[in-house]
Structure formats: structure tokens, C-alpha cells
Image 1 (cartoon, helix red, strand yellow):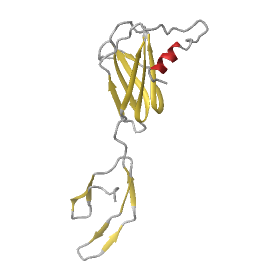
Image 2 (cartoon, helix red, strand yellow):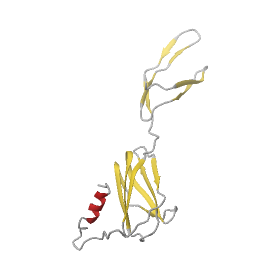
Image 3 (tube, one colour):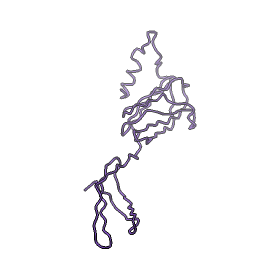
Image 4 (tube, helix red, strand yellow):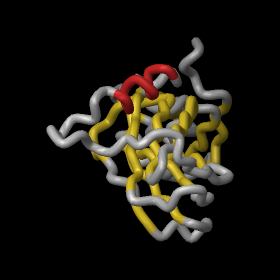
Length: 174
């Protein structure tokens, strides 16, 4: 059976207490066990069937990171291998002086817009996300240089005229 542990190693064989070490267990799986013991006279006793669950110990993998620079901002999108929160930090060096506006909702598609940056300046970015078990995935960039390609400022009526969304769509960002 594929859900059986790779090994079951007795840690003690005599006395009133018995311990075993299990190896090769899957994450986020339920395992059932039953203790069967014999005394020196050959009398056999069986416990009821019990179970336990293993936890998720794998952090979400951050991938498909897309960074789109603008005059004073960066638009960042990425995916995670499992549902995770959206978070990150950025700065002029790896001390990451500022935080991204995050989101505690668990999802696999993430995005953030970082505004108020200086044009033609390298920024370091560290994206993070935690899954439901609290495992944190991390992705760090080497740095990005916002260049003044377009002015994505808001139009007087509060809309961006679609220029920002059109450029994002042309880069494969939805």
C-alpha cells in the first residue's frame, strides 16, 4: 500500500512501555494503527484502531513572477503552488525598508502595485506567502529598474483610461 510508512523501527522492546519510530510518512495524510502485543506466556492483546494525521511542512513555491516597471511604480504578479497569502517587502537594498500591501486571503494568483518609487532606480523585492499550515514560501529578485515608459497616473475622472490595463494585458498579466 502506498500510504504505509517506509519503516517502523522499535525504540524499546521490553517492559510496560513500547515506542516506535515511523519514517517515510506523507504530508497531510491520515494514518491508522493498532498495537498488538504478546507477553512472555504467549497471551495476545490488541488495542482499538487509532489514527493520527501528519501536517503540511512544505512551503508554497512562488513562480511565474512578472514585474512590469512604470515611471514611479512596479506592478508585480506571481503564482504559488498552493493557496497562500500575499505579502512582500521591497527597498533600495536587501534590508527591505518597506512592505507591500498584502492580502491574508489564501489564493494561488497574486498581484501587487508598488507606488511612489524613484524612476531609474534599482529596487530589491522579496515576495512571500504563507499556506494554511503557516509554511512560508519566499522569492527574491535581483532588483528591478522602473523606467518612465508610460505615465499611468489617474485620469481626472479617477480612471486610468485603460492604458495601464492594456499594457498589462500585452505583457500577459490579467
